[in-house]
Length: 524
Ligand SMILES: Cc1cc2nc3c(=O)[nH]c(=O)nc-3n(C[C@H](O)[C@H](O)[C@H](O)COP(=O)(O)OP(=O)(O)OC[C@H]3O[C@@H](n4cnc5c(N)ncnc54)[C@H](O)[C@@H]3O)c2cc1C
Image 1 (spheres, protein in one colour):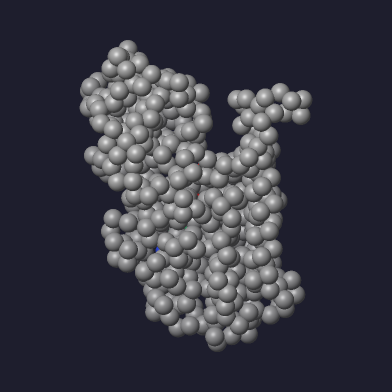
Image 2: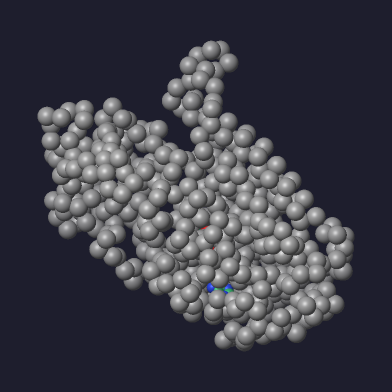
């Protein structure tokens, strides 16, 4: 690595004492170049001023954070604010990705929205609220650069990422290295957090594969939609496994089945072919479709009967509600989490636009009122089979000095990626200070997301099919909720959902505060 001894113009060398400079193997393949809008153009911070973090850096080795995206920026900030020195490695602008345009940290590669900011009724809004309470840099700067967007938190993308960059570069405990890290950090580096995102450079990806096994790192996702169980009409659908086979760990009635007659099936296939699809970006066009995970519309294009002999085959299934009527085709949904709140549509990965998916899937009998925790997609996306590879505190089981954070762990979205970065930093900080990581409760947005990524609540045996997901209320353990409103009317439908979400959010925020208090005590 370059620059282990070179000082940044932003901090006196004395703040990075010799113990903060291990002499790691040189992994740099590209010359260091200053970031665009060069560091020297930024105002000098009033250093050394560490009063807010106790006055002195902790006497620990620095933690290496690799990748200055949403997750890496948040992780570096959280560590530095816990008075732990950080070396932040970011390859841009020296080495580019196909999607990023600048050399700034936390660049938003597409939309400028952090999605809903409603902390009562929306799971990502709840995650915003938790992150704000945890002193998140991404949320603080997002709030400072927000643009009008109704109930969503949208940000001025340039102002946002420039401010994140300036803040991190100005922090006296963060040293920035502009370089590609081409191999997993060796143990001599001490604790490291890899947050290189969905477009991790190919050399680092190869190194990850060498350490974990080639089939444990995916380069494309193949996402089937996920439905909230409570929104499936069980007067139409029924539980049954094909041929009633229990299989390992099953009961013989493990799938939810939705029947289609001939007319509905033909209309559905036509709908698939006619639906508008999301285009691949130029650099995604070489998407290798594996025969096992072809988008459903690609199968439909191969002939009208293809799906009836593939994921929609009716064989071995009898409609419990109408035993005398043989379904022409069947859509099967499989339990997606141990709580039993989420079911995925088996084999329904798709490039259809989101609106088209909702409209078409609601023509399936039993799914007329379906609400979707996740819609289908196929994207270029480098991600780990985290439930198999990571422990519950995000450490790589085979190399526990390395943590992973951000989208590479199998979450989706700017906010979720930053939230995983926040947790990885809190866990690393606890260890750096001689303690052990304390996991956020499953009832919080952070805990629910972490459980998805690390497979804490996975259905046994499903880890091999791990696919990325946004935070959603289906990941939260159920809660007792009032059955009637204040006037004594029984809660039903939408009103019931609203009350349930309110109750989940109240519980989440209360338990998150408790967790935060405990993690701060650990770091004190
Ligand atoms: C094309 C595209 C569009 C997207 N659109 C959206 C959207 O609209 N909304 C949304 O919420 N999410 C979107 N996402 C997902 C989004 O990228 C992530 O949610 C988020 O940016 C992930 O954060 P991260 O920190 O994990 O990764 P990133 O933000 O990608 O950060 C990873 C960083 O690591 C650096 N890096 C990679 N390899 C190395 C290496 N070897 N050495 C040093 N540095 C390295 C990269 O340059 C990058 O800065 C999109 C993703 C892609 C690819």
